[in-house]
Length: 272
Length: 288
Image 1 (cartoon, each protein chain N blue to C red):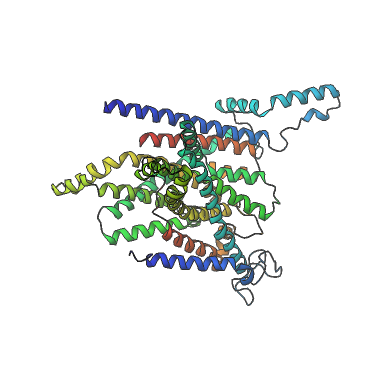
Image 2: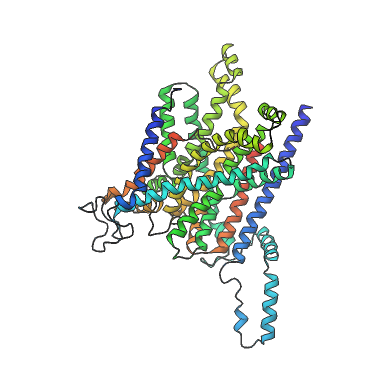
């Protein structure tokens, strides 16, 4: 076991890499542009040239799924990175001697954990004009997720930073005359880096799932740009799903990626 | 001394929790009032084009409205009215917001109660099966079931239940199950491996005594805190579930308000839900 990652982890990483490559290569792999409409055919079965058929607006389902994979799989880690960076920056306040700053951080953290964030997305969507540019909607959706999600990792970082204050290695480093900046970069950062990676692995599946839920409600990435969330909207029409089972492909891919991400994520506990 | 220390710790936590609760509600109220204040068309004075008013009167009215509707004043007025149950009028439904809330709160409360209780019972039971008998044959299926449920968006789960005409509270419960399972499994596992339990087992105490005295009793405060978190998580899943499955509750109201760009309604819902979530978290923190 000490020789490397578990076989399940290796398998999950390989499969995830495959999905990411498929998403990245969407412009080359997709048979059609994601917004191109073939108006003569709508909601059709797979046929030559359209391996997964066409949706109700006559757009190629396979092309849209490939582009959606790019949006969901690449932007969720980007949002997680924003959360981690914001959390690290704010948690650094815990290292300061000021009790007021530390208390403000704790209060801000509790407030952010208490706010119902899905409401913020709903209100944001209500504020945006109906003809919002898809690039703006996708950027806002994931950026807001990233900024709103700082509180959970920040709690872990703050606890870790406060724990370091009593650590023996810190006393030794201080006694050796190391400057605070050197202690932070050479000694404290490796501890935080491991924690940041763990938090990163927890946040990615959370954001993939959040985008899917928002998209299903029509509050996430705006049409015509595809994301797994807005592709799931077909599930609201059971007659369409029964007649065209391939409409379940986005859900299948989402569940598959989520399972792979869960295998990679550290043990899952809600913050008490 | 120990008791005094505990009391002071509890008092400090109570005070800090109360402060956080108040700060959260005030912040939520501020955000809500700012949204209403800056909503499109708020500044428009229908008398601005009244031919019977002179230019001086119109200018005076405009100046007075600007002063009255400055954000700080508007915020205080909004909070004071909200404290008396007046959240304004919904633009989309053309009804007082308080009336809309009254009509729908029971539907959401029943879904929330059923879903939270179901999630806690199912998640707790699954965690117990994974930890207590120490049998791989039970542990692996429990972890797989939880992992699969975690991979499916709650809204998709709810749609499946809706089209099958199965009870929706069960969908809320299943969406909650993996979150409860992960935490409960870790908590129970920690106490299950405690030296006190091992010593008690060596003394020959029965399973029931071991479970109640050495696992459930010490884990009780954290399990109580888990109830608070579960309510908050279940509330988060209500909006997509009610919105997609046509359940006339607060979640559906929020979604309809968003689609109709009804900011007074959204602001009131945001404020109430913030207060509720902050209150539940405060109680959960106190129970810990």
